[in-house]
Structures are given as C-alpha cells and as structure tokens.
Image (cartoon, rainbow, N blue to C red; front, top):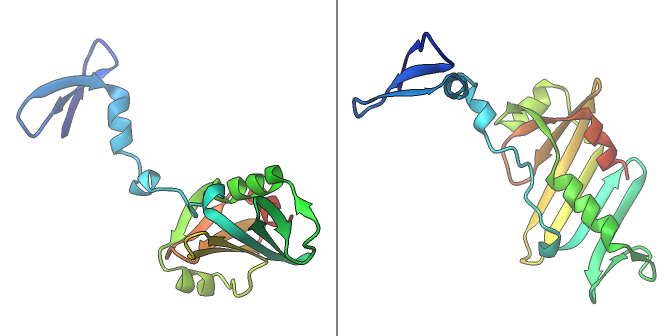
Amino acid sequence: VVFGTKNPVGDEEYVLSDDGLVYLVSVSFEDKFREPLKVFRKRDIVDVNINDVKEIELQNDKGKVKVVYVDGKWKMEELPNWLIGDDEVEGFVRDMDTLFVRDFVSDDKEKALESLGLDKWFAMVKFLKKDGSTISLYAYKKQKKLYVVSSNKPTLYLVDSLDVKKFER
C-alpha cells in the first residue's frame, strides 16, 4: 500500500495497492499505519478463565493465602471450613486477566528486571489449572510504577499503577 496525496475536496486520500489499483480511502485509514508496531501487540499478560482454575495462591506483604476449588466450592486451604464467595474469586481472576498494559518494557524480563533494580517482587499470584499447568504472575513496584511478569512469557510489562490494588487483597 502506498499513500498518495489527500483529496482536495474531502477527508479522503488516494492509495495505490500492490495490484496497481488506486483507491480513495478515509484519511484516518493512514493513521493506523503510522502507529508504532507495539500498539498492535497482544496485551494479555495472563490468559486465565475461572472455569479452568482449581487453585489460586496469593502472596504479598500481608501474608499468603491459597484457595482451592473442592466439591464445587472455593475454600481457603488454611481455613478449610471457611467458604469463599464465588463472586470474590471470579472477580480476582478477572482482575488478573484484565491488567492494563501501558507499555512493553522488554522482551527479556530477566535483563530488564536487573537493569531496573527490581530484585524482589511485592506480590505473587499462582494459578493451578485443572489440566495441571501453572501460571505465575510477579508484581514489582518502583517509584509509583507497577511492573508485572508472567512465568510463561518473556516480557516485562508496565501496567497501570492503579492495578496495584488488585495485588494487595
């Protein structure tokens, strides 16, 4: 695709395609081609669905808790007689699944963590799926910024600083 001049009487511009045809398209069409490539990257840090999870472990400065799905109910491992509301667990899983990625810091998370001086996470979430696989998220804070890495991806993500509350439950 080759962009030409703008149409003098409208909000369109001429585009030459590989097949030699010229099209008149909206000026906004070109805007997408001018975006940095990272804008088009998939922004999922972790892909979890409550129906695939049988155990969740959360560890932060408040302590450590593990909830397990037993006999159709979520229970705290430490207090097996306490039931946890499905809404609370589903909300937590949804919160982790919808972390807002502000930027892709690096695709070499170990190097990036070291260069930023992030050697100790402040929160860890581990999901044990029904198929036996695990996914862990590690959250790091530095100067009002929140960084997250996933055990199954090479990327260090900068996420919305408001998401820090999701790890402080």
